[in-house]
Length: 384
Image 1: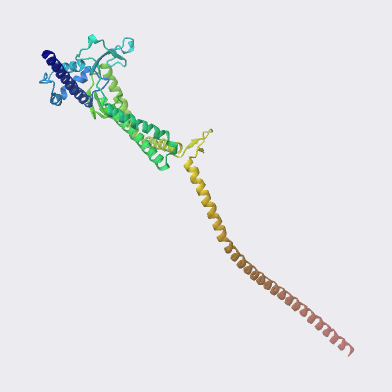
Image 2: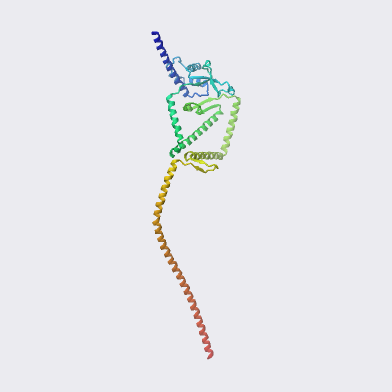
C-alpha cells in the first residue's frame, strides 16, 4: 500500500511537471512565432530565430534544465526535438502526388510525416501545433457574429454611420494600396543589388493570428543567385534606368499618370458613395444616371418635408392676398392717373390742331378780302 501511494504521488508529480514543461514550451513556441517564423520557411528559419534569440529563450527555461547554452545548430535541433516529442511541432514531407513541387525549395503541397520519421533535422518542413486560448477564440467568435449581423442590417443604418464607414473603408483601401506599391518598389530597387529587403515580409501570410502579418517589421536577406539570375538582374536594372530617364524627360507623362489616377479614384469614390451610402444603382443603359433606391428613413423624411412645404406654401399665399389687393388698388390709381394724363395730352394736341386750322382759314379769308378790295379799287378807277 505504501509503495502504491508513493508511485501514485510520483505519477502525479511527474504529470504536473510534464504539464508545466508543456506550458513552458508553448510560451517559447509563441515567442518564436512572434519573432517572425514564416509558415513557408523550413527549419533553417527556425534554427536562425532560435540562435538569434538564445538569451531570451534561455531566460524562459524554468522546468527544462537540460539547456545551458544555445550556441550551435545542434542545440537548436535538440530544442526542436523536444517540441516534436510534446507534439507541439509536427514534421511534414512533400506530397507524394505533387510532382510539380519535387524540385521546388518550398513546395506548395505538404503532408504529415510518418510517426517513425518524427525527428528534427537541420533542414525540413514543420508545422506548429500549439493550442489556442479558448477564451480568446470565444470572444473573437462573438465579435465576428455581431459584426456579421451589423453588416446584414446595413440598409437601416443612419446616414452618418454609412458615410463614416464608407470614408473609413475607402481611405483604408487607398493606404493599403499605397503601402503595397511602396514595399514592391523598395524590393525591386534593392533586388538589382542582390538583396531581398521587405517591409512587413509576412504581410500576406496565411495565419490564424492577424498580428502575424505585422511581425517582423523588416527582413533582409542576401540572394544566392546563379549566372542566369545575375544577367536577368542586370537587364532589369538597365530597363528600369531607361524607364526612369524617359519618364523624367517628358514631365507630361507624370501629369497624365497622376490625372488618370485621380480620375479613377474619384470615380471609385463616387460609385461607392452612390451605391452603398445613397442606395443608388446604375441604369441598364450604362449611363451616369442612377435609379434611386430609397431607404425607409429617407421616405419618412421626404413625407415630413412635403407636409412642411405645403404648409409654408399656404401661409405664403395667405400673406400674399392683402399684398395683392393693395397692389391692385395702387395699380388702379396709377392706371386712372395715367389715363387722365393721356386724355389731357390728346385734347391739347387736338386744340393745337384746331388752332392751326383756324389760323390757316383766317389767313385765307384775309387774302380774298384784299383781292376783292383791289378789284373794287380798279373798277372805280376805270369808271372815273
